[in-house]
Length: 569
Image (cartoon, rainbow, N blue to C red):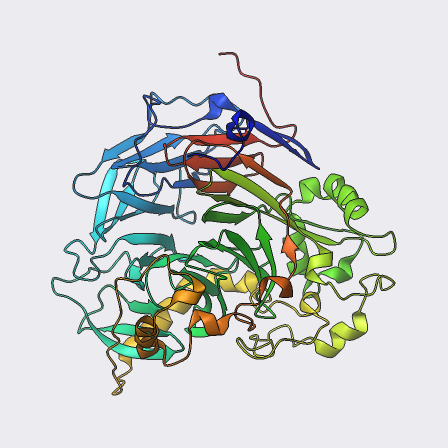
């Protein structure tokens, strides 16, 4: 990919970079790819994706890596920063005909040294369940493409469940499956369960239980990615229509929405404590959205092209241990967040405090996240207190016990007291840190009953006989690259058919859905480095390294400061 202006220096690919924690180094011997190491000709193929799982074996080397390149799918032992990759011995390798793998996800709950459940989505719409340890293929879902004929964009196991999984398609629909159920031999018939602003959820109408259990129709155009909140209670979806939509997954209620500055949203992730969501997309920006306040709190500009992946780094996200009042809520919640980045809290935090505050107001929470894009660049970002709480007087050293008591809903609150999405701008003194996060408050008990709760909820849905069934029509050929000012009235009319509300991009700009650029803080990246020849498609933060991958099919390991190992070739 040609770079703008510049000469040799601009085009040079970086193999190391320095942040305040220290030096991150590319480990060439820890690179994974196809066995022949030949760059893959990526024209017209689906993005390379990477999934990790730990098999919990006794050897201490239980990490496994799955990645797709073109029509091929590979499964390797991942040796990380410890040992060189051995590409000659993939545990499992599959080559598909007529369709390509597009995404995949391991079930971490059921993984053992003897067996692992891996879901793989395909470009023609099918989803396969395979066990790469046993080298078995157990099931194929949507085999006849009767449920959805469009490409699978995202597939994930429902957190805490051994059998439920969610699949998103470029049609704009999502489907909830149970691995125990069949898909039937005829196209499913649906009955409306719930309809809201620009979304509808249907149950499958059938005498015996069959897949899909639920069909979600979300927004306009492709549903590009979704992510479950850390406790599994909420679901964040990003679509080609430029909207982030956050749902309560159990109750199928819309919690909040956000609109991109321009174009489609391509990727989404949650902060480790579930308080913030970051998105990236065709506006070349990363956008930070507060879950509690339902509003954009910052944007980041560093990429020169579409942002393809965003991810939080839980090992560098840190909390000042000396200030327990900062993270209000239960002790368990505080300990949960403290756990993320405890290794680095002391060394990182002292530097953060000096850099980002006065002595009277120590920085007590810093979130680190990263992004990679089609511009072949990796950016790292810090979300600090001066961005999260911009109106706090310096003299108040982050101890507002009285405010917390006055404004906090009870610990078991379902979050109804938070700002409703799309209403007027919240008061100028944001208190998001002093509201217990509704998605975290019951995290401990929630995950253990997740499977049962959804299963019982679905069976309850299936028994409802709703007379008010409505068919929803969709414009499948969404125009990808129109600018904010050039949405035709025709396309906006079609949108109104689906949403029954005004979602013309030109009308959302300057509203809480999509603030103007000057209305929210603009973050600058800590680092912004060109690290590949082809567009980047993977960014994963592990404890001792960062993993990136590009469309040529090279999966790279970057040792964290002090974690790189010298290999003898």
